[in-house]
Length: 174
Length: 168
Image (cartoon, rainbow over all chains, first blue to last red; front, side, top):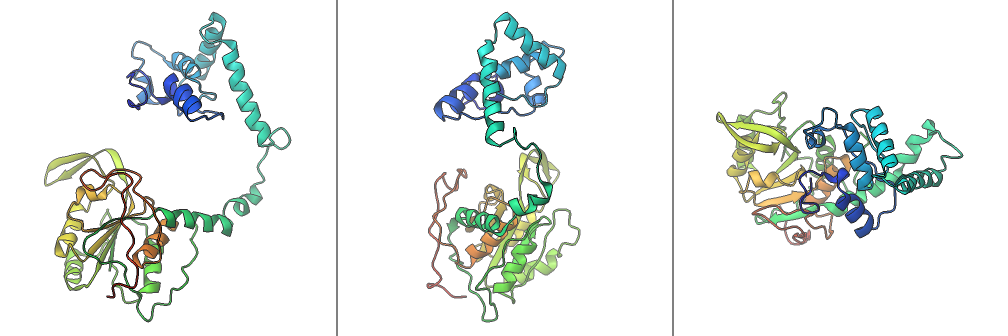
């Protein structure tokens, strides 16, 4: 719940049209695929106290809010049937479903999943933990460190003569 | 001198030792197993010229911290050892620098901190950055991404002192 973005206490971010359609898509201009957090989480299901199984209602609200992919509904069958019923009754326009399908297909095409659907596991290490990536991670980290208080003037510490660390060691991988 | 909580930080320690092989390093773990005893640490703190406390702590929601038999907080640091940090700080607040790897809100529980650096992260890269910052090897323009109530507002930061001014 982000009251500053949506004061409605019955909505959390993934079920809030003001946040997904409003802030994320319109204000911030995000055109990509929006995936919900787990929809079976207690923080969300407790907002539907009257329903024995709120999976269907939650799924419909998530689609109406503007989400494209619904993650971990409490009951997949109930979620599917509720969305289908909502489209048939006109609560959700069919064009709304088409929008999401298009965004998902565009993302898959952009990733080339229509040509190659599998990850080359043997290349993962080279792709993600090469020295360039580690150097960049170190740059990001160095740029973030912040001095907040300096009342005792203990900085900077001074290297001892025996200390030879002109070059810091590269970051270790965990 | 370095004291830390949590079972992280080997890179911080090795980077520190590269620059100051003479630094005395003590460890404090939240589960106490393998920690240096306070009766060893506190006299060393009192004798030291400068003290660095590196904390590897995150905040946990819904955790109830019990201190002296009372529940003190429902949002707290992930480990114990708060009183121990206070003891070290109070032994020499001016000469002691705290570097928060992990939660920047650590200072909220220890407002007597006089020298404070945040890295916002527990990653190995943050450990390297922490040591670089201590030794004046970083001259960035980073700003606090969050407000620390009673301490500083979002966007705040102090300039890094250059190495020329001070020695040990």
